[in-house]
Image (tube, rainbow, N blue to C red):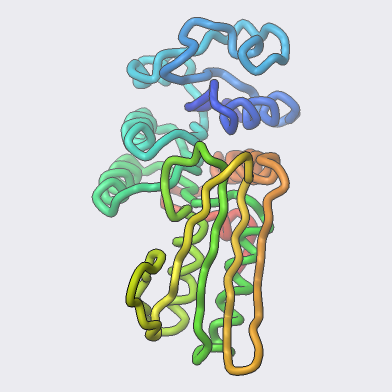
Length: 264
């Protein structure tokens, strides 16, 4: 039985991940961590019935991990909180699944150093959907064959998403740029903005859109669009739980979701 701790437990993704952990015969929830709802029974918070697992204070995460001794911590929070959570968990020799996005380069360095220094395994991905990971592979293949085409990335999310562009859109741009030997990224356009050989990236925020990503390859007389649409957050929760099971036995190191899925 793999013991799981979840940060951001009272949020939409945290609650959904907990529901999936509870449904799995191979996983056991041992702690729910957040900055809100402290002391409340997490089962009642997610409206799934009492579990006798109180929500623990994220500000005391090291002590919580010491008491509950999870094998894996799953983090879908915000960048500033996730950095602290990753450092605390790796310091307690807890493996990690991190789906938080919006990290600065400096924050990534801090997390990766702590993971490596403490010899733990971590799966860090801007998107745990199986379909999105296939989507990134399709973009690489398209870029190899359409290198002279103009490339634009358009992403849309709900009006509560804090970071923009999305981590998934940025990963898409990075995948394409790597294939093409390095491209400038232009975030939106305004005024006089003649198009060069950059990759354009555009963010839309509205309503309850779960996550749409479209990459447009436009050439003379034709265009190709490669699109992924998430219909519900369940796609992300499925992948996060799958990653948690995989990382629990992985060798120390930093991995991506493609490693979990065996995608080359």
